[in-house]
Length: 457
Image (cartoon, rainbow, N blue to C red; front, side, top):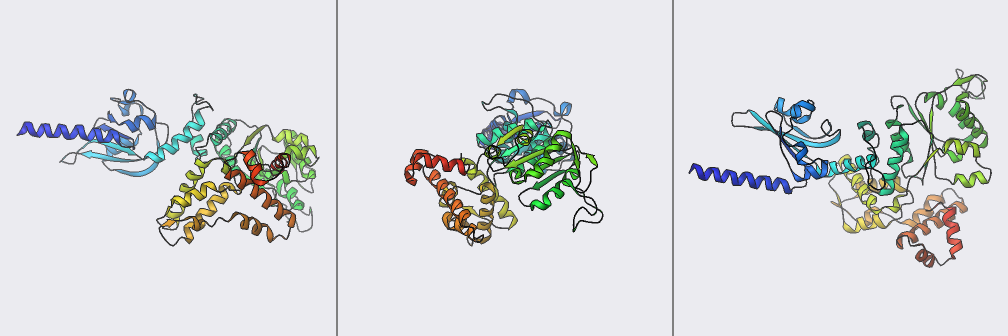
């Protein structure tokens, strides 16, 4: 009878290990001495460490602060949560459970990771440590992973942008972020700052197009008492001073006047500023990251943007691709925002296949920002447990007209509508430009002229 029990237990043990080896979540087990006695296939694949390298290693010797050892010591489980794994050197999400005998003694610990979360984190890891061909590029630190955590993408073009941004973050070089409205330029600027040696100092963002031209100069450089009518009696610090030792992000740099460009150029050359109404020079240590959706090269040729300032700011350009060029990111981000907003509004929703198809076919002229707003609105207004295509309320042509109609600017409305129609034609033809030209029924030269006009790649 005892022999039969042993056979059953061995059969159960072997079957249990076989099951663990087939699941998608990574699993690791240590014994009471902190020695690794088991890892499954998913652990090898997702974490990137072979069994030979980790089995029978004592975690206490090299990783005394590992969460597995903490559970071994306290006997208290750690529920699914994100934390920094000392063994791996980056953040993961995992659940740690103590293994106790019938007397309540801790004999080991099992750690089970979340496959989807680790996969996403590893995507960021690969983006930072590998080149475009997949070769090992350099080691990555936790600071970089945390910095670029908000940029969610699996698109090779976007991952290449992350690579460049991570590299340039370690320097003081001026960066110019190029891309359409809503594609995530400020996220990149903030990530570069957080990954840099200036991360403990201020990150100050200024939208140059949102501030009236007559106020922008005083906003950037500050002013003294009585500098102009309505000025504060005690004067005011400008954004440059606020960002001292940190990073100043100048969004929509193409919208600043030539006069302000002159003062900005002076700073890039001399590293000092002068407040409005004062001649005193103030030394400021600031790194500039700029961004624009406009064609600065054309503006330079037309005399609308100073060439010398352009070259000062455009040391490292990063061209962020529009969302419509990556169907895989549309799906990834849609589920990301769905998860976020269903938790926020305490709902349980999912997309119907038709809704996801609609999301992937839409051209997203407003890029990630538009996608985020559409998903939030759908979650709020959905009355069932499924988000349908109708819940998304994507009416491209009507939306284009309505968004510009309130300005009573006919030219702007026409241009916006024209750009939207071109984007729709490209999306329907899967970016086959010859088919798009035929679909639009215009000449090839006119088509390419409009692509250049609207900065459509």
